Image 1 (tube, rainbow, N blue to C red):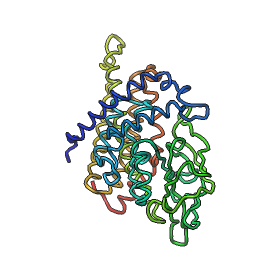
Image 2: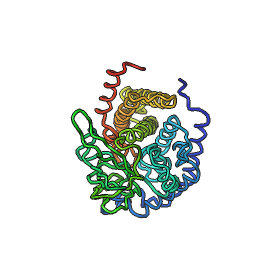
Image 3: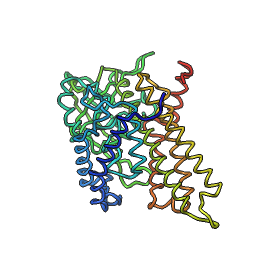
Image 4: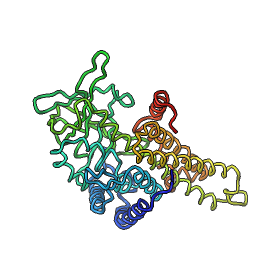
Length: 409
């Protein structure tokens, strides 16, 4: 395969950067006091303040009008249908260009593949529901969250306890969802629930539902604050007899895991590519700093110990980027690429942690300050080895693919 990004996709990326520089960066500058201080960014309850939410919505809708917000969505849903290679390139490009802690850019202008916009899971909506909900989602007016994980069912999804019981033309949902990105702000939630209890020799059946977050009994009970942040985008959902029409079911009864993995696998490519981009951003900072910072009468880039840090970071990034692009290419060719997706997710998230750590070391004391941005990236990177499937679960997937199908690469 050719690892070069096709010209048409590069042109989309150039247009995307121009859009951000023209539309988003001026808003960031005009609202710097709001965006750069977490005491202003979040309210006392840990949620984004209303002004931030309005800015994010404004950017989503402008991006949708420009065609970037839905560029990665399937053509059958009304999206640009650009595919996995474009997803990898655009997420890498955004991270490499703008770095971390850009609340109005990352996963807003071009959203995560399974959290927002025209996520692949929406293919499973019934026709009438597509007609009803897709326009507002595609325009950026309304957003989604993906309710799969639970307090006792993260890596072990089949331990799910949330239930959906049929009641005429409706289902009644009861349970708790946890670690749900965008849940405090979403207008709709894709909720997975047990509809067929486990029987001897048969696993329980799980079904997906499209739920209005304003429904009676639907409540985001709290924000989960992680790694020193005062607030965030992740929350806990309580479902107390939430009624959902059967017409809002996604896919077949008992087919929820097929729906879930359609979204999760697409999201993992974007996440892995973002890790590559952030690592490139961090290494570029470290290289430039090593040329300017002097010790013992010469720039620290001339010290072998520093050169080793820079070289090992570059080795990691090159390997990770090649892995992501190869995986995206396989998906573009129609392969399920289960092992390859797992490899990309595990390797790239772990790689980013190593690279940021080395770049902080090159910066010395400056690397730990909030002036450079490396410490913010370090805090972002560490949870990525857990979110969207832990590194251990990825290794389990890789091993099972090897055992069942042999070495394919």
